[in-house]
Image 1 (cartoon, one colour):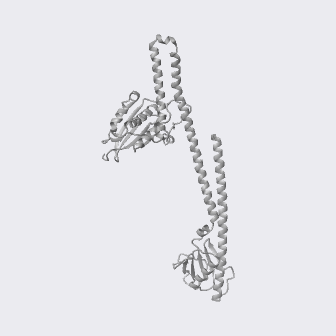
Image 2 (cartoon, rainbow, N blue to C red):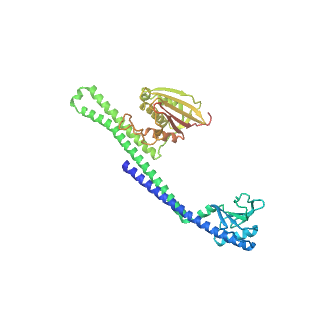
Length: 421
């Protein structure tokens, strides 16, 4: 799938999901508004009946206008034109609400015209009645007799009655989740596809160069007159041997990563001094001849349980990268220290550095920092992945800090064989 096609698919899918979500929100809101309007109408009718019964019992005239006023979404006041008995009011409210199937919690209070505040009342639940103080119920700008009813849980009750809409919303959330998950999988597969493509290109380039050199050398060796110049014969035979060794090493790297992928590392751990391993890796001819190494082995305790071969390979890979990714005379500083029962190894170089967006990817298998069509640095993108696998197999951690143009510092922390530092 091309990049343009992938973008079109993502945009169309995102627009579809957003459209469905907008429609769902619209209809859920409409359904909620209908439920709320129905609830308000039922409450108004119930409170009107309560007002009528109170007026009949107290033998007081009816108000000229509608006695029920809705002051907010969950607060109603009712004019009654006379004193109200608190117990009678509670009985009438409970009876009317049950008759109209309004099994929701409510609070009510009675306005005291003398003290000009809400007094009395209860908090009523379908299952129990709890007497409380209702001084917090708001008053109305009216000096006549009235009572107030508030529904503190009205929104929760209305939402609980929207069963089908809640189910459809849950289904939509699941669809959105799977859409995002599928999108992430597609992007991951595309990234892996690009990494695989880069790996194949790099591997082709890495194999093509030695094969071409071997082919040229072989053609020269076919010349019958070459036996008359033994030095030249030896020279081309050496070239073939070196290039063959190079191909062998490249194949071995790929096979090694395949074995590691199957978690068949097969570490042979023994007790070693990390300082001795660092010095042994630093004395490697290909490293010491190309870079200036500075050792500051300050850790007082440097004994670890490790596989010598793999751990030296880890150090060699980091040294080799410091040399390859450098545009000036390579300088590598190695510093050790103890921290929390472990030994830390910092490997600082003066190379080209690593961009922040690449730092979290350099330990991925086959990943190489993009350089366009240039292949000025040899490799398959396996070195740092191997380093991370080996360090973690030793129950250690590795991290990197770097700035483009200011070099890189790789930090390895390995557990000591003893807790003392």
